[in-house]
Length: 247
Ligand code: HPA
Image 1 (cartoon, helix red, strand yellow):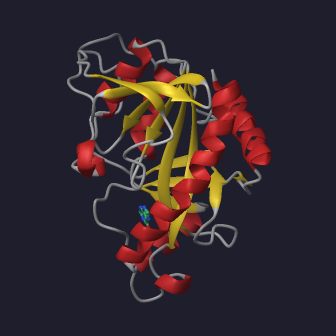
Image 2: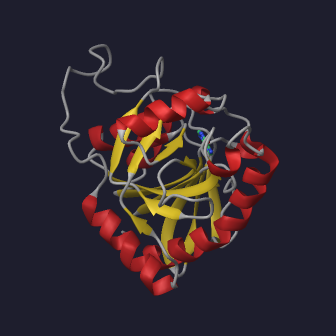
Image 3: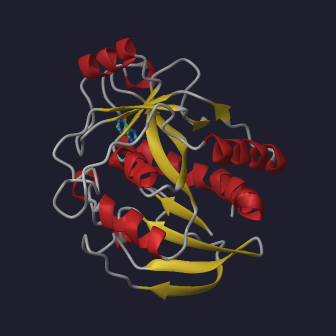
């Protein structure tokens, strides 16, 4: 079964039909919200609001381990993660939808593994390609069918938040090779890999990163928020198509 994790601007998936909410608990605690099972474009999927109901959880306080564990325990095989980001690279202007193929982790202090030597054995996972290529290809095809442009590739920088970055921090991320910046990409991607789940991020650029373009002196947060909400209509069109062969 396919799971969709919705981020800022996508706390509910109103296109879901015949929904059924299931509150689950895990050995790692409670997920951000009840899982919402339903049909999208005729296919059974499950939706999870990453920030919880009414966006109550900031990125650093999300129980990523419980979220991924809960989905895995329900028989999920693939996860499409929706994430709003700031754009850094020239190809990542506001309103761009992008499918990153690499990630850099700048987060700290988050419970980021199931293999912590306490609950389970120590194990190292390969993370050379952090996103599932098969799922990325499905998303690219889905976007094509939906008639939506989806930029293929790019490096996602995961920052700690909840504050936005300084201009100098964005310059550093750019030097590091980052194309977009968000706060929730890690440890979500890593935990999915530890559980052998296919995982890909559909990134939604809602603002120019700090110190760049329209954000040269400040980021207009209300504008970024409303752009995010508006862009979710395009995201949902892609999700409706990917549900068809998402599994
Ligand atoms: N920085 C970090 N996270 C974000 C941004 C940003 O500029 N925009 C949306 N999420």
